[in-house]
Length: 200
Image (cartoon, rainbow, N blue to C red; front, side):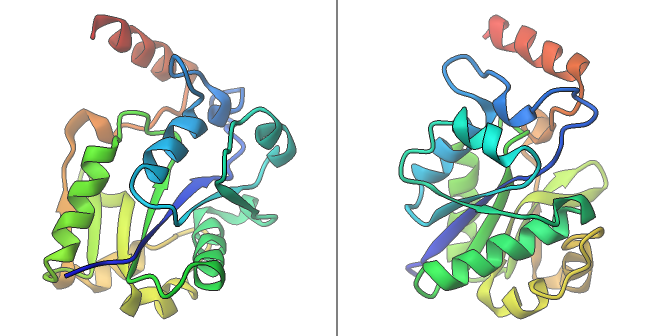
């Protein structure tokens, strides 16, 4: 089963708990956003970043290469608005995607191997949703089959795609990447992540 997969990198938030732009935090040789974009681009050329808060500053300080960006002016209303903006872009600019994989830039330990694993399982044709375990809930990165695009276009901005996942549990596989699923939201979490990188 050959699949045409698009990837949307969600990076519209204001990073209020961090106190600085998470998108521009350093991983070593790349910013968080550059790392996520590089990972996505290594999988598919059909990659777009959704920016919102401080979009001009973030764009000016990010090596985007050939990756396109779209601005979500409603970013304050919740992640759902960015999911819909990314979906809209994919349907307008990428030719008939079989599925869209939504990821984010504040999970620097999510790598290409994990995203390829999601896509590989999807290509077997058994599941319409591949999601990532976050404790007892399922979330980003999440892959949605094109049969769910209409439902995605109608999601609540604040709740995001949670209702779609809950309504399709029989068609959903939740993967657990362990510590890689941790997102970096605060200065303490970032400092701990940096210390872990030095140990490797």
